[in-house]
Amino acid sequence: MISNDLLKGTLRTIVLKLLADNGRMYGYEITKKVEELSTGKIRLTFGALYPVLHKLEADGHITTETEYIGRRVRKYYSLTEVGRSGAQQKLDEFFDFVNTLTYVLKPSPA
Amino acid sequence: MIGATIDDNLERIRSDLAGRGLTCQRLLDDVLDHVCCMVEEKMHAGEDFESSYGAVLDSIGENRLPELQHQTLLNLDKKFQRMKNFTYIFGLSSALVTLLGAFFKRMHWPGAGILLTVGIVLIVLVFLPLYFVTNYREQAEKKNPVYPVVGYLTLALLLAGALFKIMHWPGAGSMVLLGTGFLIVGFVPLYVVNAFRRAGKQKVALPYVVMLLVGIAIITLFANVNMSKTSLELYREEAVQNEASVQQVRERTAALLELAGDSVTADRQGSIARIHEQARSLQVRIEAMQDEMISLVGEPGAFIGDVQAIDNRRAGDQVISKDGAGREFDLEANIFREMLEEMIDDPVVRGQIGDHLEFTGKIWKIEYGAGHVLNEPLVKNYYKLSDAAKGIALAEYVAIRNLLGN
Image (cartoon, rainbow over all chains, first blue to last red; front, side, top):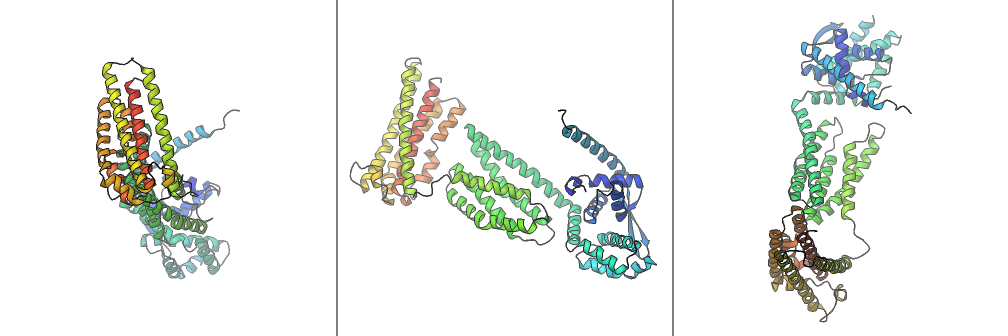
């Protein structure tokens, strides 16, 4: 399991990247996809996911469309144009960060 | 078939979620679908609706939904986010100003007092209230305003007390005392209780730990007092130490003058002689006031040790205030300081002199002025005067050393 602390700053990036790859997704689908991609190491709870989704929506990065599944409403999230460039930028930032961190933390040759 | 079972119970699930604190419609749709998906997954594995739904509800728990809603709404609240950012930036910059002030003070550079005052006033009046308010608003449930209020009072009093102490403003002692009281009676017990309650559930809030350490550090700073002795004894000991220091410093000054000989210009020699003379005259005034106070309560020629036990609060009032000796001394000490400031160009040395002679002017009026000496025990006034004598000797030494070019 990956701790929530490590995950906190990257949740936005994860959500944006997933939506960039998969087009539109609903909340439960996102948590399942993250679990699948991380081979079960990352379990997003809805308590962590929905605040981020709503924030991204309010900032204009993603947009929603609703569909009826039986009698209940399902909200699909997808990237806007702003979100698409934001996703790329976030990803670049993230890989830059990981590279730097790897460089800093790599074991020194004994 | 399975979908039908969930749809049959849709209203029940909706009202269950609402009953657990999820009242915001846009979130309710999300979570309703999410919960239904979780239930469906279990039902696909062969469980019936009731046991699946029961397990999902258990996994959600009681507090997660209000927390989720609170967090989402705060995330969307632009004003709150701006306030939070502002708080962090503000806290950082006022802490830096304070730190800079402490550094200036340490180096005896001018401006230390202003920096410290601005830094601490901003921390106490702007940063801390903002911090506690945002922190409080971020909590979803079990809000207890006692915690931030006690935390604020403790920190504000300790910080303000430290500032007042450094600036020699009146009231420092009672502020630190009150702050310490809040820390011991309020903050620490509350903190321990809270830490136990949250144990395992959430990590302990780091800012509170930092604040606790700051509080303890400030107290240690002011608590270097031997509690087993009465304060009267302490004042006498301090006074005796001060007198020994005066003696030492004078010897060093004399040695300086001897070493220098005729190596300086006649002009400088004149200045040095004036400083020396003035310092001596001030010290004579101090000794006269001290002797006068003692002779009011003891035998003529008695030593401060002989009368230390006598808590005569009228002696200081009589000698320093009523007889006007304090006022005359203050006038002359001010002239001495102005003279040194005129003679010395180096700002660092001027800063040192200012520190040594800070009892002149405002400080004298506050700590020694009429109404204050009235309520102080004899030995405390004696000690204060010895402290002034030490400051004069040190200022003299520093000034002469500078003029001799050392």
